[in-house]
Image (cartoon, rainbow, N blue to C red; front, top):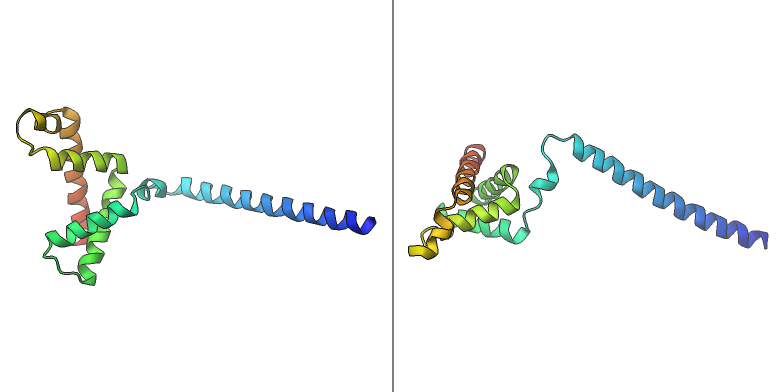
Amino acid sequence: MNKKIITLSSIILSTLLLTGCSSCADKKIDAAQAATPTNPNKQNDYPTRDRVDYVFNCIAKHGGKLDYVTQYACGCKIDKIAEKLTFAEYEAASTFSMLRSTPGENGSIFRDPQQAKDLRARLKEAEKYAEQQCFI
């Protein structure tokens, strides 16, 4: 009977220690993230699919040559844009940019609002910053 109690106690104690250690580790990571000047969660909220799409479009704009230098530079560029814009801002700005050439009243939704103009300007600034940082 004593042996069963000791075994059960050791299992419970081990579980508590493991749970406690994992929650302590999470708190240390959260504190480290809060201490960084740029929040890594902001930079990493871009879905992989959108990052890859951006890199492929960037490679196509720069000659379509699928070499390491171009891939690295284009990957760097989307990372630098992610430092400046959240994914929601980037997505809205790129949508406004792509659809602003729609003719007539249908296109005015994407051309005329102040929000669209501001987001397009912020995207241009972020892209200019990215090109300077990534040497593309």
